[in-house]
Length: 176
Image (cartoon, rainbow, N blue to C red):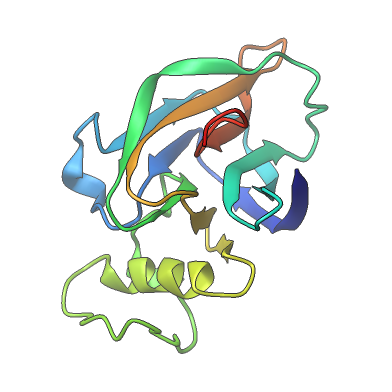
């Protein structure tokens, strides 16, 4: 399995939203997104893992001071993906159009007439890139392996019981 560090982002709150960026912040459906609390604040690095055929198999982000030495624990929440992409976002920034500066490519020519759509378009522009993902303000997004579906969320905790790493598994190595 190949991997690539795609950058870093700042987590200013102590909460992360894990989910498909097509869902608005106020959606609140536990099956669509996952809210993680007691998250370590600071700079987080993001890594995309690829299979040999370049299919994205996992999206992982971790606090830069984390050692990733702790066991991955499957959370009790899965996320639903309907736009073939998913991400991990600072809850205080997710879906806020005003954090998107500059012009967007808008590769899918999405109508940006509602709040939160500009943030979603920024995510789409990243997943349409040759890297199949990238950094957006307050988070990271990638294509979701096989596409739409339901995916598990894994976390790591430090000795202070703060979440210091989050990973989305889009499929297991032994799946076909």
